[in-house]
Each structure stands twice: as structure tokens, then as C-alpha cells.
Image (cartoon, rainbow over all chains, first blue to last red; front, side, top):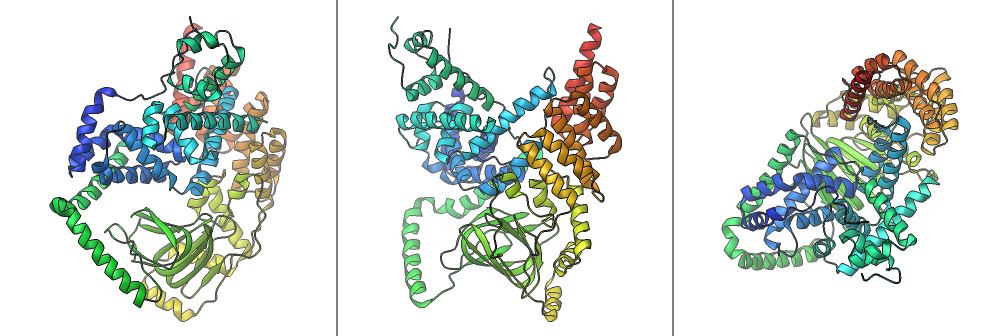
Amino acid sequence: MMRHKIAYLHRNNTDAAAPDAALITACGNGDATALGALFDRHHQAVYRFLSRMSGADGPDLDDLVQTTFIEVGRSASRFAGRSSVKSWILGIGANVARHHIRSEVRRKRTVKALEAVQYHGGETPEATYGRQQQVEQLTEALEGLSHKLRVVFVMCDLEGISGVEAASTLGIKPGTLWRRLHDARKKLAQEIKRRRG
Amino acid sequence: MMRHTTCPSPVALTREHSIGASAATEEHLNHCEACTEQWAKFDQLLDLGRDLPMHSPTANKTETIRAAVLNSFTQSSSSSGSFHKWRWVIGAIAASIIAIIGVFYFQWTPRSNTIEVNDRSTFKATVHSHPAATLFRAGSQPDEIVRLTGGTITVSVKPLEKGERFRVVTGDAEVEVRGTIFDVVVEDDSLLEVSVISGRVDVRPAKGASVTLGPGERWGKPSQQTPPTADPEVADNPAPEASAEMLDAVSPLTAKTRREMTQSTRRQRGGDAYEQIDRSDTETDSLTDDKADEDEAPHPKEPSPQVLHPSETAFRDGWSALKDNAYADSIEAFTEAINTPGAGKIAEDASFWRCVAYARLGRHQKALHALQRFVGTYPNSPRAGEASVMLGWKLLEAGDLDSAEKHFRKATLDKNRRIRISAEQGLSDITSKRRLQ
């Protein structure tokens, strides 16, 4: 039985690492074109990451993405190359999300999740409801996590960033990251179980 | 092959799961049921994580954000770029000047320190922060937001153009203005007080009624607080008088229903506060209007207590029960809401959610009939597309391909992309089934 790490969604594109580094350097020297290129390359990842980190959508999410890239432009000269540019940008996004208006977003999301009744071919509506409920439970459980646990879960388990790189981005030791990831998974599982009753 | 004789620690297992199992762990997992079970739970959790909602911007929105980012970057670069080499010298000089000013400021200015938030042309508000106020900018024009978590601020807003907004948001309320000067007091992220100096302000607490304040008027937090409920959804569900936008974000009711409910409740009460809300819906504020308002010398007002129509009470009960997976109770409450005289648009929403409750309860025939009744009775409902696609799948399940196709086709016109996708999938399934027949 082979148990390899599941390639979740979007993995880091190592081929793009060098151009990214060059872009961030140019950006640090005031090159707006470089920032534009970084935006084009990473804005979708930032959208995805921030929506999961903050639960935001619509204009709230747009604001968070905009703030993140503005901060990327401001901080580009401080990029030290300890992690990939994408991880570094997501690290900035994590800080932006931390300061986001959590209560307002939670209010919006709670009902939207309940209203979003989705149907997929091949599944009965009831099965879809069951799956949808589980996703809602995970979403709510994720929002209940502390920032430091949520960020490692989203980075490592959802975005597929390696633990070492995520640790470097977050400025923590790898051992700390693994412990946090374990705590995050454990709490999420417990919370989902509790919600299922 | 070497393998762990004892189980790895939970943290080590997490690490292995994340980076990929080593040969030793592979071997161990082949012999340890407990670790294999834990591993499978990790897989399930991450598999579920793949279905978490993801949001992507539209091409237009992406361009707008991109332009805003580059504009901000260019502005900051142009102001600092030419002095790049001298930035440390300039920084040291600036720091010295700030320190000197700071000394004079704190020595000679007794109070009322001011923080100018409108440092860019995209901000129309000047926010004067009183001592110890904590705030940050959470959005710029056309939807300018100041997030205030504590302390007092005085806000002066230039007259806004059509489509522009300015709001102060706290943990439990929002205050929206049009060309106004006003004070906001917040403690522990909770709105305590709003005092209007000129113009008009809408105060929308998450719990309780919203109110429009004129010049000289003040809103204070009611001393009697509603006990918190165990259900966060109920706790967050504001009164019908709250703004349509705020309710759009939190209520299972459609916006149209809420508007009708709000108007109906206003008519029933006929209170001054609601009269003000009606005026604010139609008037455009200006300094001239403000002057006229000042002459009226209005009195401070407090929000009125919330009175719900029986149909809404029943609807809320149904909604809570649905959320608690108590589907039978939910059906009963929604039925009561539908049958309550004067339910109006509430009945429409209750009818929809009763369909959902039937489906979740596993009463497929009931769900099917309820959905047929809903799409027949409310063909123009905002939820008609959603109901149609649900009905389509139910009919497909029952083998009625022609009827299912009809409802899927209707749902393909819905504005919600997810519903359209689901409907297209349903049509595709029907085509496949017909080929097999």
C-alpha cells in the first residue's frame, strides 16, 4: 500500500521560483511592472488562500487581496529569500486576514453556506446535502480555530506548501509547525464530530 | 525492511502524513490498525478540505484591484523613489522633526489628538481620533470603511457622490453617513454611542432596530442587553428594521421579503424613528438640509424594541430547527409561517425552506410535491431557479426525464452560477440516460 502525500490543489511551481525572485527584487526597487507581474501570477492563489483563512467573499475578499498586494509592494525590499515568493506573499496575506473584520464575515458566511444548496450529477440531492453539511461543519470548525492553527492548516494541508517552507514563512521552527498542524487537525476533527452530534 | 516497532507519536504521524510516509512508516502502517485508522481520518479531513468554498474574482474585478494596487505602489514609489539613496538620512531627519513636534504636541496640546485618515484622494473622511482610540482603515472609496475596536472618534465626511459610501464598523454594529460630522464611541469592540453634529447617520446595530439620526441627535446602547443565544445564527440575525444590505448578508429571507416586512412593520408602528428611516431613503443630504434639520431641534432617540410578526416568529423557529437538523420541527414551524394570515412574502421563503426540510428528512414524495407547488406558486421567486434544479434532480431520480428536463432548462437561466452548473449537469445526465434507453 503506497501512501504518498496527496497533491492537494495547487503545488508550488518550482520552475517559476527564479523569475519570482527577480520580480520581487525589481519590485523592491520600485518597478511597478514587476508588481503587476507578481499580481498576475499569484492573485488567484491569494484569493483562494484568503477566502479560506478569513471566510470572506465578495467585496470583503477583494479588499483583503488588494491590501495584501499593496503590502507586498511595500515590503518587497525586505524579502530575504528564505522561502518561495508565493509562500512569502501568502504569509503577508495571513497577517492581513488576521486583522480582518471577523464578526462581519462570519455573519455573512453562516447563512450563505446554508443557502448554497449545490447539486452535482451522479449524486442524489440527499447525498449532496450530507457532503454540503460536512463542508459547512469544516468551514465553521476552521473559523473556530485560532489564527496560528488555522494558518498552518490552510498553508500546509489546503495550499500544499511544504512544512519547512511554511515554518520559514511564519517564522517558527519546523517542530512547532508540525505540532500546530497536529493540533489543528485534531481540533477540526473533534469539532466536526461534536457538530454531527 | 526497517519499520517502527512502536507507533509514531501523533505529531510525527501528522508530519509523515504531510510530507509523505517513509518506508518505515509505510511498513508500520501495514501492521498497525490504530495508525492506519488515524491516517485514514487525516485523508478524510483533507479530502473534505478540498470542497471548501473557493472564490475567484471576475476578470473586471481583477483588473480593478490590479489597477488599485499598482496605483498605490506608484504613488508610494514616486514619493520615495528619487530619494531612495538618501532615505536613511531623510528618515533620521524626519524622525528628529517628528520627535520635536511630538514633544511640543504632548507638552502644549492638552487633548484631542488628531489622526488624519484621508491621506489619499480615495478617502473622503477625516477621522479625528480621541486618546486611546484603536482603529484602522478597512476599505477605501467607493466603499470607505473605518474599523473601530475601541475609544472615540469624530468623523467628518465630505459629501459623497452617488455610489460612494462611508461606514464606521464595530464588532456589533455599523454606522453609515452621507456628508456628515459625528462622534462614535466604542468599548471592547461594541458600539456605545453615536452623536451627530451635522448631516445624517444610519446606525445599524446587529441586535435591535436601526435608526437614522439627524443633527444634534444621539444613539446610545440600550442598557438592557438581550441574553446571548446558544445559536450564533439566531444571535446574529438582526431586526427587520436593519438595512437591506446588512440583512442580505445574514438572513435566510430573500431581500424582497425583508423589504416588504420592514415596510409592513413600519406601517404597523408608525413611530418617529421609522419615519426618519423613510425620509433617509429618499432624501439626499446636503449642508443646506443639515441647517434645516438643526432648526427642527430634534430630540435624541433610542431604538425601539423589536416586535415580530407571528409569521416571522414561526419562520425563525423553522430556520433554527432546520439548522439543528430537527427537520420535522422545522417543517411544522414553516407550515405555521405559511398559514399565518398576513404572512405575505414570508410564506414564499417558508415554502422554499419547507421543501429543503422535507428533502433532508428523506420524505422524497413530500419534497417533490412541495417543490412542484413552490415553482408553480412562485415562478418569479428569487429561489425559483434553486427550487427548479432541486425539483429536476428529484424528478430525474423518479425517472420522469421530460419533466426533469423542463425544470433543469429553467434553472439554466438562473443568475447563480452554481445552480446553472448543476442544471447543465442534470441535462447532461438526462441525455446519457436517453441514449441508454
